[in-house]
Amino acid sequence: MATKIPVAGLLMPKATAVWLVENTPMTFEQIADFTGLHPIEVQALADEEVGRGIVGRNPVEHSELTQDELDKAIDSAMNGDASYRMKMARSDLPSVKVRAKGPRYTPVTKRQDKPDAIAYILKHNPEISDAQICKLIGTTKPTIQAIRDREHPNMPNIKARHPVDCGLCTYADLDVASRKGLKAQGKTPEEINAHKEKILQSQQLPEEEPSKPSTGFDFSNFLKTSSN
Image (cartoon, rainbow, N blue to C red; front, side):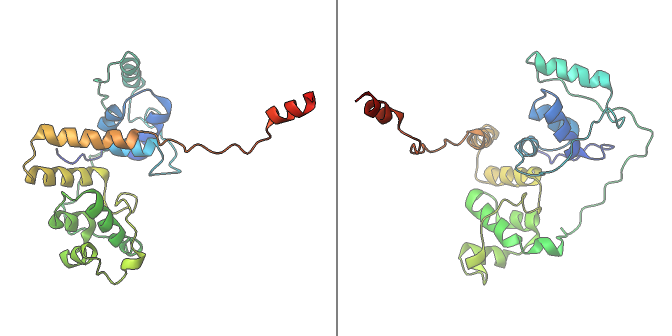
């Protein structure tokens, strides 16, 4: 599956996704298709796992979408048909030029998060090769091996954290790398999709709250005492 690229002309895809989640019954897949994000990333925005504090941006008010297109998508979703895909409004602005891919640059403030992200991938995505981790995180194979062998100098302070939460890659990048790893293991496209669906469903299951012992006043004993 190819990496999704934000739609040309959509100035703030994440803010637009937040608005669509909050104001329409559209599915994550429909919103992802319009914004160019990954469906898992849209779900994470909806659950406020990432992007907390992002203010929704109405694409109609900013001439990125017509009201007619939005109404068609809403009607389709309300009728149980999630197949409708919105088309962006035409813009006279020149298209955005995509810079050619080069070495992944990581801001200095994010570099200390790399070991945490590597630890997460090694634990939760063992199918991703070291070469793919290097591309995702912008690290080196010796660093990955040191964390795998628990010989990293800062090992006591390393905590596995999702690389997206660390701001080191996108959900789409991680998904592509995971699919490549699963394919290299000999899994068929059907098996890969089933594996991904199982992971997605496990993330959507609500956690059961542990039963708390009652600390309130026992009115039954009070009534028995009063009757006597």
